[in-house]
Image 1 (cartoon, rainbow, N blue to C red):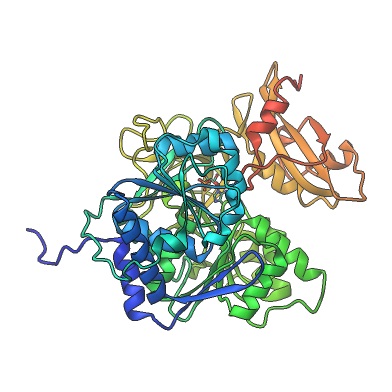
Image 2 (cartoon, rainbow, N blue to C red):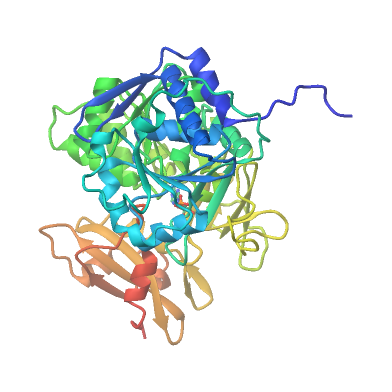
Length: 546
Ligand code: AMP
């Protein structure tokens, strides 16, 4: 027997209409590169998104057509987010920090017809001119006519138009189509640290359900009174769903633009009364260092922060909590998961833990959000015990998890029985909390046993002379692989290999301790700011541990 409830589709247009209809009082603030602020409301965002949809429709943009953006967190990007998806076309956000050949690959793979480019990124787009795909018809500069570079080498090969001219004179209302909720809404490529980037094609349904999920108290905990600032870029996995979740809650939204230095962010936190923000560890680490440099730098109202993307070093978390009263919540996600999968909020079982005990626990990535199922299997395919010690590869399934990559059927990341293999190696404890111990491809396989490179890195970061650390596996004739430790020393220190390796004594099993230490000036990072182990492995390909 079927239920007798209405079957209204879950659509991105309905998020925007809801915010415009019910939350006209919230502010939408957008920082320009010169620090000036542009202010709108949800009804104004809705009207400008409608104007954009009319303009694109008039140019023949069809449902399912891919529309790319190279843009920061700012109001015109938000309008493209809503206008493009609501009309049934597919918003394709591209990370401007990727290498040019990766951007060219992604645009070609997606076969985008329009490319929206922030004026500050036009030079990058011009450099790509010879590699832009044949499908591309129009470059939209996200500003006024005056912000189109003159001369503009892209003119002549493509139509080049300013976003303000495009929408000028268009009606501020659009009868959004009643799409199938499973229709594609947006497309984002994985960072592709090894091999080509892979496209993840989100649907209206997956995006709406993910947005509702992240609003929950134990996830982002966002309501209408909140002022939400996504520092996480809107070009990276739907800005962690914040542009949608904020509108669902009717919250105010502050978009920091291209300037993510601590002083610019702190100004927005204070002047706009930001109550919630989310970003990667590098952002919060830099903010903490900046705050500490001058005791007068405080928060009038400490915001709540969420961190994800890579693990948050506990000393950063501890510094925020103890010195500034700011709670950082650790969450884990992936492009393939829209992105949120787990978050580490307190449970009744640990509610009475003091700050230090929970800070230590907060290094873990958290428990599954409702809707996400986790399965962890060891190398033989057996599910591991939930004891916080055994580890295996994490697999997930749920309504906002990809089931296939765009243009790439049959990828082995998707199991025959409907799970996505994350490539993350984790432990699970008695409370169901996961801790990432490595990427499957970075685990060091020594004599048939696994050594967690991340555990070795995190431990050595506690050494007073270590600024940054990376551990990779290098070839060994007897043990297959052994760990090589790379260290960027803190300025003014000159540790010896004995100092460094001695630090591991008593903290890990003897056979985990790296055989070699190499001191380096810097470590390579990916376009999303993560340690680029594939590059390090290439560099040390011919190194042998014995
Ligand atoms: P991306 O698809 O670029 O968002 O990268 C996803 C990967 O980032 C995951 O598979 C993890 O390896 C890593 N990651 C994401 N969040 C965390 C976290 N909180 N702690 C450690 N690693 C993380």
